[in-house]
Image 1 (cartoon, rainbow, N blue to C red):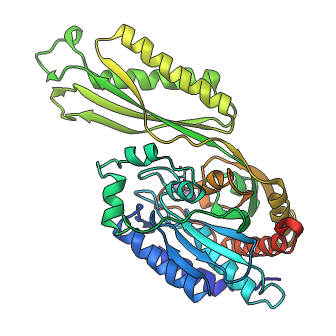
Image 2 (cartoon, rainbow, N blue to C red):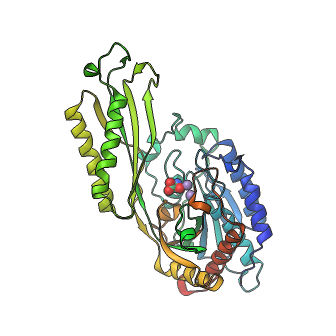
Length: 411
Ligand code: HGY
Ligand code: MN
Ligand code: MN
């Protein structure tokens, strides 16, 4: 059995947390100074664990085992949301490091090859899952050219600022890897609600994002009578109300939609706004439901343009991510390991968050393991998990990795 070292695991997780720490959370947006500092730290840790380590041209940190393949690729991402939790992504990256060391520490598994990776920009500062898209060859030149963050920084500027513009980019070699495992916090309440300690993921949701632009007429808040106004913010509020009224009619059981980014210009109390932006993000595990939601969003724009003096325009706000199913064979190895370490305390479940495993699954068999999030909280400084759940999750992942590499999956 691979020899996971709890102190070593938790010490490294706490060390990574300290890079970009703010209160109980972490601020390490892709390509920021703290993100790159964390990547260099990780590269040193991968090298100390005996891996041939590279930080590639989009910031992916890749540690290649010196043992002959096919190898198992294990990892996640180490960039965070603007106000991120300390475990989102970081858990799976430090688990990958610990799985490498745990297998090496056991003579029975010491020859099994595990490659480790931290992908870049999973959190969509520029392109959601930028690093895994680049690694599997699905990052389009158009996506890259259009990539700009919410402060107007382009991806090209960020790459240059991080000193990566001329650095070669790694492309995953399908002959090198028999599969990809990603461990992650659940980021939701299901495991805690069901008193379970391990989740084996079945499907990962698809995500789409639209931006609705509202163009009206800026004017004086006192002298412009209501009938004469072309109030961009009022039109935005009406549109958002229409979404919340109409989306439930076509939504499926686990459909979600979020309007978490709003801009009103000039955002002043005594001025009728002439311009506004609303981001509408929606997710589901079924592409036909996503298609229906997108068509409804478009219909609501057309209806608003027929009724108000404010002009609405619909733009795509992010690279879409398609729903994906996790690999059945890898899932069975995760489930068997979960039963060995937490008998009866695990379940199979969908992921409401998207993950690099969803992108990688287009090129490699991929599977995911969840540990519980306390209170189901994530994408918030309050994000946390119990230390014993963190250790248990790593033991299950290491055990599953060893069983996968010992199986005929390696061909
Ligand atoms: O938003 C997501 O699902 C991921 O955590 N970035
Ligand atoms: Mn994540
Ligand atoms: Mn996240």
